[in-house]
Image (cartoon, rainbow, N blue to C red; front, side, top):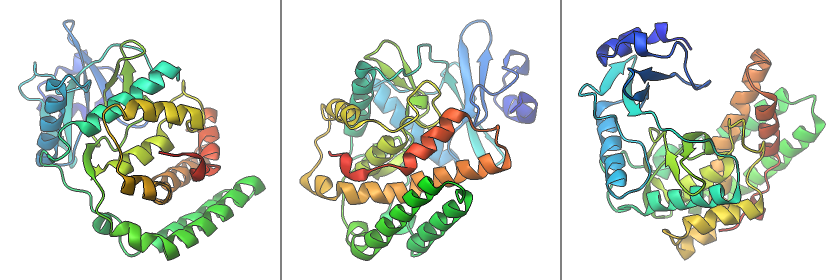
Length: 324
């Protein structure tokens, strides 16, 4: 993605395009670096409404005030929010540091940061839209999930091992929707202001024990189990330096140890964890697998060998191995 496509954004932000990187620094979305010789900044998309963006900024400002490491808008720019093509764009400071390299210290610190985020004013919604199971998952969720598995079978028809995994998941899904879904969807589970995209790609480390969340823009008011399950499934997604797999069970327990410094899950949350994890797998992980496979089919060179390996590993996910 080249900056020429987004010149109107830069004009609205009153940013000199001569100081902007020619191409996006992130393969999957337009993220541009602005460098005026004084301090580097990042220009990227945020929420799709001004109200959503302001809720996000109230939340991140509160986290920063409590010394929780999350990026907040660059206050050097008075015109720090611009609308373009039904999206709002924001300017953040460029955070210097290193990428996640999967050390034990970094995994523990990542868990600790998410726990601190979930534990910060959990009763305050900051103006976020509130996630509702009944609104988010409509009556067609079961049928859509089964249709997704049919699509995956067609996309992976030549891979007997993957097809066997898909059939295994289809049977799990049938059991889930017939025996678990109704009760799970009606439960009143604890909410938090969650990241909704907490993964290695979105962390920069300023020392092994000091990660900074650099992409909070997908955040919302959700069940903390949702954020935790999504983190387990997709923490290593799209990160070339991370292992091309999920956390090992040992790594997951290490992550949870850091998380648990600030958050203690309820007995109800623990009792439905496995069911909730399956639900998030059907929604988020299956969508990712399908989307990546379609991309590979249309353009085999667009996705790295490492990412192809990751989605294969995701298909082999065993929920029962991951406890809370």
